Amino acid sequence: MVRSYDMPCTVESASLEPKYGNKFVAGGEDMWVRVFDFHTGNEIACNKGHHGPVHCVRFFPGGESYASGSEDGTIRIWRTGPLTHDESEDLSANGSIDKVKVTADEVSRKIEGFHIADEGKPKEKEEVGEE
Image 1 (tube, one colour):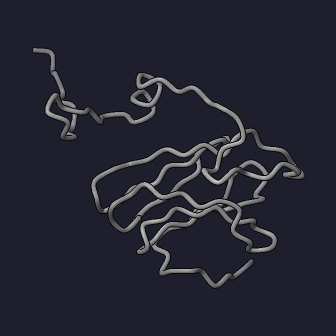
Image 2 (image 1 turned 60 degrees about the horizontal axis):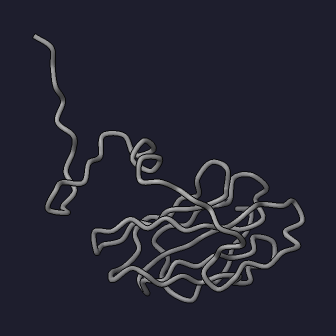
C-alpha cells in the first residue's frame, strides 16, 4: 500500500491522475464526485450531478478530465483544467480551471460501440456484416 485516506462516504471507485499523480478522484454512495490532493488527502473539488450512487470514476489518459458513471444510468465528464507539475493553481468549485470544448462527435469516437438511440436510451451499435 502506498497511501490510505479516510473518505467522507463509502467509496466505490477511485482513479489516480495519470500524468503527474498529484490528485485522485473518488465516487461512491453519497452521489458526489470528489477530487483530492494525492499527497495530503485534502479535498480540492466536489461535483454534484448524479442522482444515484457513483459506481465508476476514471481519469482520461492525459489527466485533463475524468468520467463518472452512476446507478442513475448516466455518465458525466468533468474537466480538471490544464495540469502542472506543481499544481500551483487551485481548482474551482466545479473542478475546472479553464474552458475545454468537446464536441459530441469527439466523445462518441472515444466510446466505441456505444450509440444513443433517438428516444434517448443507450443501445449498442448493430454490427453490419458483408455478405
